[in-house]
Amino acid sequence: MDRSLFGIFSSLLGFTALGFVWGGGTPPPAAVPPKTEGEWRLLEPITYENLTVFPVVASTGYDTSHFLTLEEGLASGEVIVREQGEETMVRSRDSNRQYVPNSGPSVNQLVLLNRSKRPLLLLSGELVSGGKQDRVIAKDRIVRPGADPLPLNVFCVEHGRWSAGSQFSAAKTIVHPSVREQAAVRQNQSQVWEAVTAGSTYAAPPRVAASGGAQTPNAAPRMSRSDVAATVREEAPTQSYSKIYESRRVGTSVDAFVNEVQRRFRKETSGLKGERVVGVVIAYGGEVAWSDIFASGDLFDHYWNKLIRSYAVEAVARPSLREVASYEDAREFLQHISGREVTESEPGVYRWRETSDGSLSQIELEAFEPKPMTIHRLVLRRSS
Image: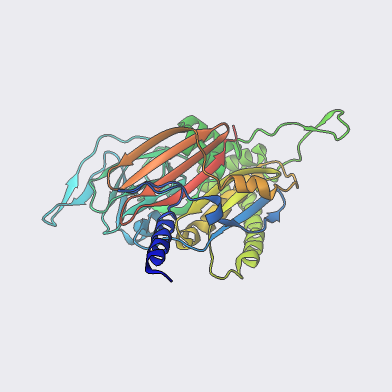
């Protein structure tokens, strides 16, 4: 091959490699285009009752091993979470330990300290249990190693308790989409509480007979509001999210649902060659409603067991329609959304960006170090 042609070809390959930044990261010095639908591939849908899971696979990904997850950090003691007003330990520059007092306790703010040598990844909807109340993380973000104690925005998911409890620990739970939506998009505490006790905020339209005659009700969900209310009375008097959705009345139904979806998911994805599952697109009945996509197969694997349980909780709380969403509708959730943007960032660490267009919201968390990447991309169809 002519050397000049070879040089052009090599440059094109290099440019294409830079294009594998997910969700539209913009690392300096050159802007990187959004990851396109063609760089992800949807597998055939996996359907069980009213839940359909479309696995999202990619042949390329990032090394995300340098990120610390909340579950890992709390388990190892490298991450500390405290109520405001408690003394929080920090390590000074000369390696001496010292304690820094904070302001008074707050429902919607905790104090977090990352004592590890790795950036800490936090996802909206991750639950931390203990303290005066169980809380969920409000927004995706990254906490750099060695950072000062961080005022961490959270939402309460245990309405009936405000008293000293155990030290905070990772509950190995991500709350289901209706609750996650209220925290990540609406950012309203009262709506978070309502979503916890309602099961689902999805407002199902009345069904109409095929002949165009009288309206017929939607198929009843496996788990109704009365089921949740009974569980609160009998097993979860503080309205604790964990106690409600892991209870005998509700949890048994969710467990059976998860086990069957997991079995079908493993069967569909076990034969992949040269590709990894990096995310999923989720539909309930005939409506595509949610997607979570990560920068690597390893990150997806870490969160998958928690995510599938969250999707299953939502499924049993929604009308049990056996309709199946179309492949074409699911593909729309892989396309980049353009619309009104809101951004937050910490220079050199991360950028959080929400883009809204009609009933759709796209939330991207972009990491800047050790190399630019969109580490998590969430697209949801707002349910209320």
